[in-house]
Length: 92
Image (cartoon, rainbow, N blue to C red):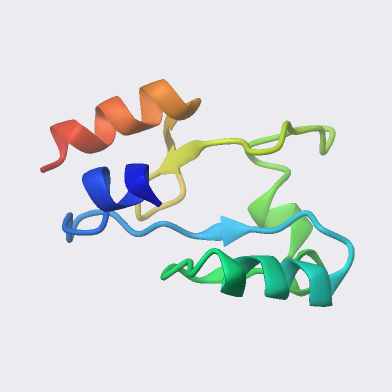
């Protein structure tokens, strides 16, 4: 939350979306609520895997957590936490 509050919360040009890879919907929802995440969470079963994951993680393999910054058209702008947050800083 500290990183979000410092880098994203007040930046109107950036929207964080959490794509949960948890197979247990109740556990994923409970975790998001416990952490007081103010951003939308998309559950795995609700996500169109071909649209949300495959373009950025061909083969479906991804680390948890993974950071991919995309623009409004879905084009990848930065990958990895350091690169994504550096690019977000530029967008202020």
